[in-house]
Length: 546
Image: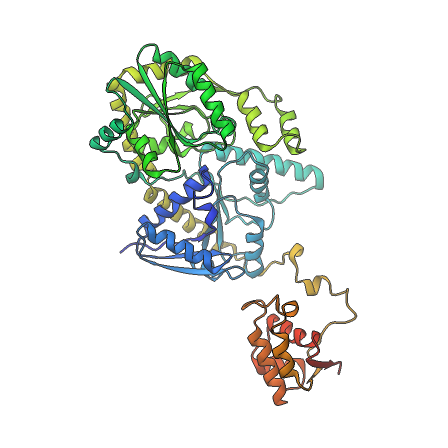
């Protein structure tokens, strides 16, 4: 019998779908859902989101990946589904509003498990920096998808602590858990059989003596990997052997596509290029099946892990990658492929770039693009690796076997999700020991009737007397159909059924004060009070100070 999933999932469709945007976060999120379905195919999965439709969509996606269990779902602001599981997975650094919401119920109600993706954007940096401050707690975690991501986080946290101490004398800070758990992949999906490889090569008209290099991902020279150094290295190898380069992905626009074509003609005229549209799933898979080598020379600070090299290992491809961020930790140099040394300018060389972006002189794309242009992937080492792997089929075979084994044992989703589950259990231990149960107010988001209580002449009291006005029932029917007064009706925030019940009780004349009326209807709640005020606002009742 499978162990149940012991954490809930925050669900918003754009985080788990590539239909509108194909980026690492969305690709990983889509794969994550498939991993959940594979790991807990018959369990109850807890979820939370903003609408019931989000829950329906989450279940639909899980079922499409073979899930036959059930969903325990809550719409915000309810957190019941998460309280039951004890932890909430959020597909980026957890936002402050979720921690505040939890704390208003009980700080120990559950733990937050956010995850790093890109760390170069202002939003991501701010989100990571916020974790040392309230409302976060030590039983919250930021899952770092690489050791590089953890080092970034630790450095930023220390700098923020020093800044807060020097500026306002702060001495107490939150210490979130920072486990390193790498991203997972659906390893079986990428496995390629020999007959599939033959068919794919035939379909793409690949000749027997051609070595096929594959780059897969965003085709964006400023935001992913500048392909010019790759083109130069492939051209050098093409002087010695036949080289084909498949680029499988999506161009952001025609101008970028034209830039790729221009660079190919100038820098690699001896290489045969094939473009495969990443939106066409069958063609995209065919590109992977036809490849002999995977190559990804990331030179961009927005890259924090890099899924495609791991997917390539699962597909049985040796890999050539830049020795950059997460690539350092997934690809073993000389075993699964080659890592090409990278070089950055010294500290102090980019402060103006950060300020230009902060002051909106440069867009984010220009910011990361300018940094990329100052990042070197060693051209000589790259050329040597490309030629060696292109001309040594035995080496490719050894690297294929090593990478395939590593992908299955270390990166398949059931392996990674087991680590998520273990993390949720560890956070629970910290949470239980905390004894932090009393609700904590969220000052910036206080009850508006408390925050602005000094605005009106007076506020409603429970001992004030209520009388219903003549013809209130008939007038209510008219009012309920007027957009100007019914626009805020909602089954949770202001149900018309409560308003109608209040009128029925008042018509019977068996309740007198505000408290008596609300008790009689069973609506001694904030919603009941607002319904009563609605009746008063539109002159259906008369309320008098006793």
